Amino acid sequence: MLLDTASLYFRAYYGVPDTFRSPDGTVVNAARGLLDMIAKLVTTYEPDRLVACWDDDWRPQWRVDLIPSYKSHRVVELLEGAPDVEEVPDPLEAQVPIIREALAALGVAVVGAAAHEADDVIGTLATRATGPVDVVTGDRDLFQLVDDARGVRVIYTARGMSNLEIVTDDVVVAKYGVHAAQYADFATLRGDASDGLPGVKGVGDKTAATLLAAHGDLAGIRAAAEAGEGMSAGVRAKIAAAADYLDVAPRVVAVARDLELAPFDDAIGGFDADAARALAERWGLAQPMERAIAALTAAAG
Image (tube, rainbow, N blue to C red; front, side, top):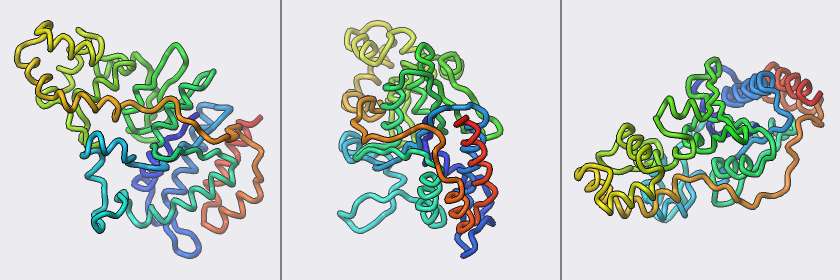
């Protein structure tokens, strides 16, 4: 099981009341919610390995160099020349170190990669895995990793933890009219405002799906447009006008699948439950930590 960790703790922050606080008054709703998410996910899906994938770089410069608008709306305005900082509510930012401590106390591997996002770590680990993989995320970009033949599926959290959706290739086809293997090209064509991807002007979900059904992938669409075949003159003009964008966008949208990652232990179990309880007591997380301990202990057999 691969966790898109930031996706989950952002969801917890906005979904759990901020009245939950530690003895010193620190808001701990995101940490509390993440622990309960882990307990539910592990209990429900019974993984034998678990990785909390991490954004070592939430907006890699190499992606920005290709598409300057990439996630630009999430950047806090600082002094010119300062590194980009993601806009994160202060009470959530203060909880990130607590979340890291809690994961460490539970023996959950936290894995990131320099100059890459958690999505890239997930893509690499899902590709490298020899058995079934559950990717837990609220980010539909990761639908591109779904692979029924290899048992890679997405546990999609967008509708909340009480309405988790298992995303397989059939689900992607039903939602968007494209196969999971085509999803990255689909996202490139239609764009994604939440990531600052402009897409091809005038091409929405329906047109993107129709083009991919007819031509297979983005390369096939561009070749057909250049040859003046298989689409209306208007659509050909839109594809041609977006040539510069289409030259670079696929590299931004596609998650990495071949990163070099430092060694880590993703086996569930083997943690010191008493140390985890002591940490939880310090931060007012006793109940959710107890639920997480129980779930992980049961999963470890």
